[in-house]
Length: 223
Image 1 (tube, one colour):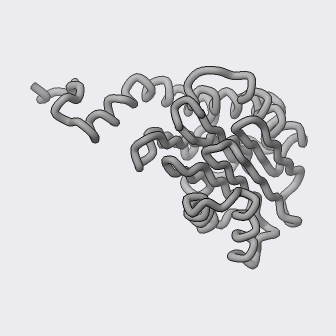
Image 2: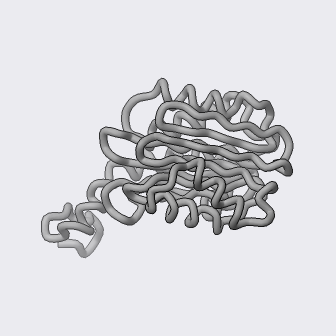
């Protein structure tokens, strides 16, 4: 009941993912990123514990394929999971257990991966990867284009209700953490939020690192 895409930007060091689902608040339990480390996705019948575990192992230097093996050892119900791991070098690995729901598929590309379950067709992840590889510009924009391509290719068999965009750059905290937890058109709503957030993103980073030289908040009372 989810489809997702993860990608990296070698030029900026950004890592991130975009995800959507018919379930409520999908990004809160399925998407994980860490600065200088990579991306972990855990979906289908989700075990959120597997996301932080994957990032910890990435930080220790394990390869994505080794991390999938470690996750399988850590979770006795691994056959219910669908997992994706992507490191900052663009190396990726995916897993779909034998109990993955409905039509499910994964795909990998240059600096990206995509996967989904309960899909309208098995070509959805490949459509997302193709869109990511053929796009340019900000990583968030490329991830959104890939998610939109997945929807255009058929997406999930049911109606999607939630979506999220999660990205890390140099700061240890996510520089983009945007969520639509329930909406009739969550991907369109997510794009609208990103378009409003993008012009302010760098200002929030500056406020954390150099508040004396940060831009004005531009709100009543801020002299």
